[in-house]
Image 1 (cartoon, rainbow, N blue to C red):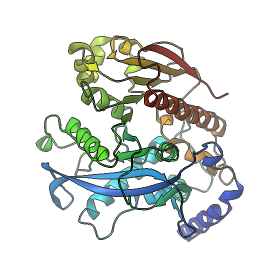
Image 2 (image 1 turned 60 degrees about the horizontal axis):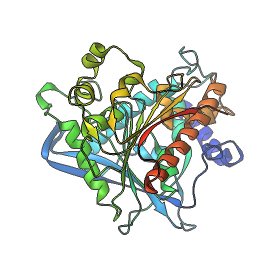
Image 3 (image 1 turned 180 degrees about the vertical axis):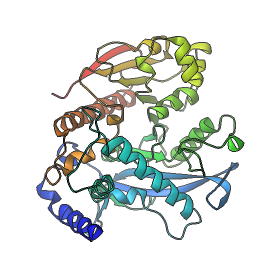
Image 4 (image 1 turned 90 degrees about the horizontal axis):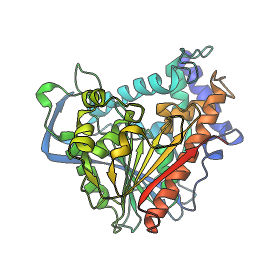
Length: 390
């Protein structure tokens, strides 16, 4: 009976959503419509063995891209469509396990905790799973369509944070697809039995596999367009992977780092202990990044981030905010709970709204950064920017 009630509420919520505040009242999309497709890439040089699958390593890849128009028959996808499981796929059991972990982590990072106080949330009459399901029924602006031909749009490759997923920033993907970019993301984590999601059994650890995975997705992304322009955006661990992988890479036009978490640290020995690969690249090797980099972190002050002051890059732009901005607020899924407030009061509504405004301003700032790179403007030196909710 409870499940039936939740289904009815979700249906009513979807019907009424157009008359309520939605994500797209804050996120102003560009002139293009947004196409969405997904695919599976197999890496024959790596093996994966878990949950009944034993073979070459798969990457579950998602692509958002510009469409000049859509027909009346095309319907917008729901958020839950981004993590649906293909029933006939040989990867069904792997995808089901991934979906289970995605739900657990979204509940942990975006639903269960009050973003302002850190205390557990309570939703009268609703479980965290109920909230997750209602969020899943929110409509996006993506339309399911296969890519019909190679275009000449610039490409963005996105790498998610630790324990996260390829759709954590679907709103960012829609935003840039609507502005004429192809946005490529993938699940860089695969599930394994009896081990925390995001980790791998010792017996299946391959040296530099994470770097190789990123390069594999970059090569796939480049194949989607005639354009030679490829941007990289990473959040948290994903941003760290950019620094670990992209030094000396002349095929990258620009990089956006969405808070590696190292920005808040000054103790070099601690950084070396916790983020040894990044430390080795930036400090020990003094690696060269031959492209401009936009560094974002909610440090609370305008200025360069301590560890990255020695970064050897073509141009560095530091973007900070003085207002409270959660580490996961750089992702779009963090803010979706806010849009349930008219049905289910959110105790941290005010902070979520302020955070959403700051999130959108980050997208606008990134858009300016990309535009300057494309127009070859101001691609040398150092710059300090400051973002607030106003």
